[in-house]
View 1 (tube, helix red, strand yellow):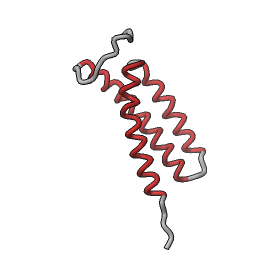
View 2 (cartoon, one colour):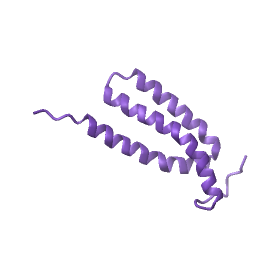
View 3 (cartoon, helix red, strand yellow):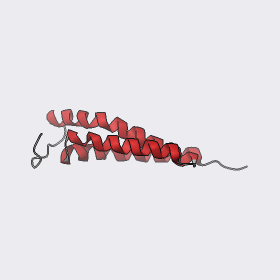
Length: 98
């Protein structure tokens, strides 16, 4: 009997990617503001293209998860701004709002 670890690897990687993007969105909004949305867009496009070009299926899937987590984060940056306005998260007093 041979064990296939691909599903477990993809599951753990997905869990870690989603867990990483949550604080990334918070930090991006704190330090850069909603202007950080284009960074998530750029990362999503790059990861999506890389997902198409990588031969290894497991890595391709993980890159796809990174791509769509990045795209999801665009909306979350704007939602984070609203959470800051409600006082749920601290605003950056040093950043000028543009």
